[in-house]
Image 1 (cartoon, helix red, strand yellow):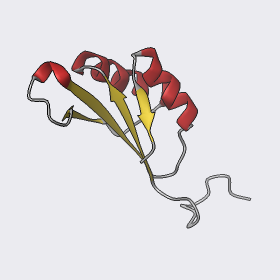
Image 2: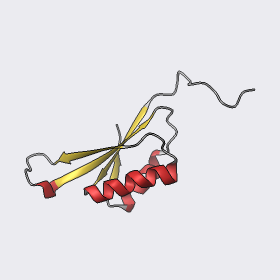
Image 3: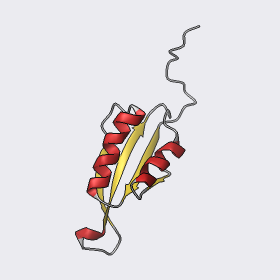
Image 4: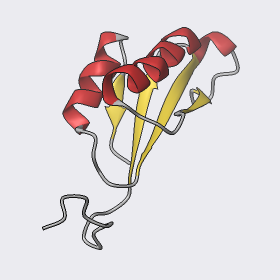
Length: 91
């Protein structure tokens, strides 16, 4: 039996969104994703201004991780974000 199974039609593409308090934290989490989780596609960093806030200090940063094979454990991703005072949003 072949262990390298082809993409299974029942496995849905997952996108994880990690919300971080600032750009430095987002960059550190993106680096940790590569080192700890073996993420090969570079995570996308997105500045997300809070609703009604114009001040750049009030911006959160999102780290978006594409997970086409649903291989990453959401709880572990949440724990990583929590290390940097962030959290994982369900997408």
